[in-house]
Length: 226
Ligand SMILES: [Fe+2]
Ligand SMILES: [Fe+2]
Image 1 (tube, protein in one colour):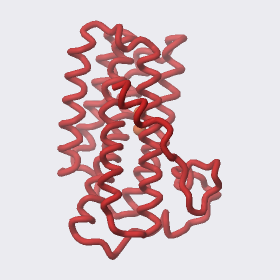
Image 2 (tube, helix red, strand yellow; image 1 turned 90 degrees about the vertical axis):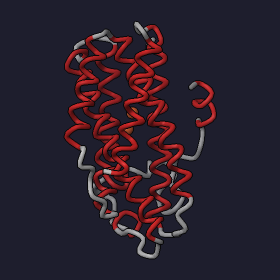
Image 3 (spheres, protein in one colour; image 1 turned 30 degrees about the vertical axis):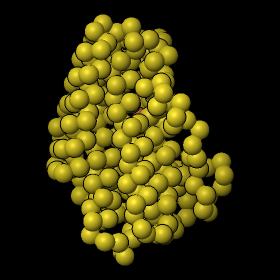
Image 4 (spheres, helix red, strand yellow; image 1 turned 90 degrees about the horizontal axis):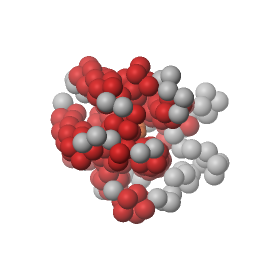
């Protein structure tokens, strides 16, 4: 995990097209003063059916993952929100997940991708996981974050390779790639935060990590398809 963290750190996270160097690419979707441009309002029309399938699966699973992440943090906040140390930490990560979800919702609509039919299950499972791990203690809540963000960070990193196979030079594909890099780095920051706040001191850390990781990987495969 730490090896992956160091491997992935420091990669480009800014879009290199028409945005100012200091802007996060994803803010183009959430900043009301942004002017609509083809990169954020159109979808490539000239890609092969297989490439369209890759794009649709990517956006469907990413939107579902951000939805579930929001509900995990929501569940953790119910139990630990008033904790003086971890409450603000969890809130900060949740706020970033809210931004991720808002952007993924817009990307999904832009590229006309249907949402997963498993949205309600993702919300319920995420909320349950957040509450359950928070009830086990703040270290277990952080261990949950560590496991989830490891899987999601790897998922986004793998997905970048899939996006690179899209032959389209359409600007929406370029900005999507930049946003996935940006979100991957955010998820790895969350992972780092969890480790720095003693996730590995959680009771039955190895078992908890395995269960949460396997659940996340299974959910990713299901949401790609359904
Ligand atoms: Fe996220
Ligand atoms: Fe995250």
